[in-house]
Image (cartoon, rainbow, N blue to C red; front, side, top):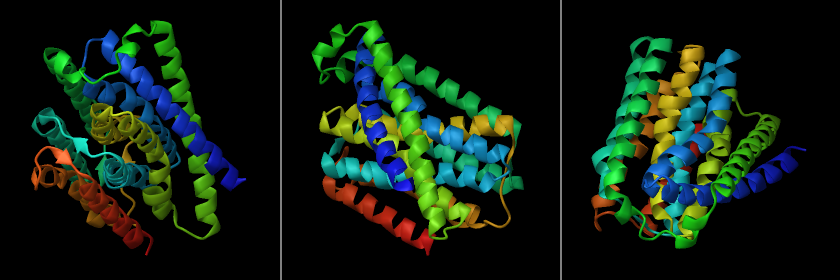
Length: 316
């Protein structure tokens, strides 16, 4: 049964990712905003839903280490696994807005999470509210700035999607979100059953199996976007998802119930969160050296290799 859930979950995630990408491109025409912004809002909200549900349920059940492990593990997977594989499939050109605005926000959110947890071992409701408010302000500025460069960001979009009706876009979004939601639910449940069968701890499950499971929507959406040459959506989706995971997923979860660091899992603050910050930080030198503003295939292989090392050390 667990293998069946994994297979069906993966299939639903791939279909859901395809519909979300199509709807996102259609929306970028309708709303006259850049593909990068669509990737960081619509796609990121939908693909962050699994992390939100898993983290919220874990916090309510009093298993905060799963909530934290899920988000930290997902952020590591988004760059090491998803960006790595996406770049291997198709080298990614990096927009200058990435390092001027989007990357700094991702680093700020990562450090804010570290200092909030390191301070007293708790992510309080107030801290969660501040994180979510910062996300709303970030999205407002992002959308406002994008309207000034709409033409440049839409040059490579399939013009046929400009004629798509509003009804079809809404249906694509609903189908995509449903596919990602149910696919993630079933994949995580199936993967968790398999992991428990071989004796892996809850925290190890959260930072590896569940994190990979809830990152599959990002992988599906990004790989499909890369294959269709929608590279702005691909990169925007990944960076947006990492920001959403911290500011939205943990922010909203903490508002509902403060997240406490489990003393029995010190590796959350001593090791894993530094892996998350490290994967985010290394994107800048990867973009600059040696060919500027491009994440080439071999750089994708380096990211993917580093992720394999992380998984090995975590499970070991």
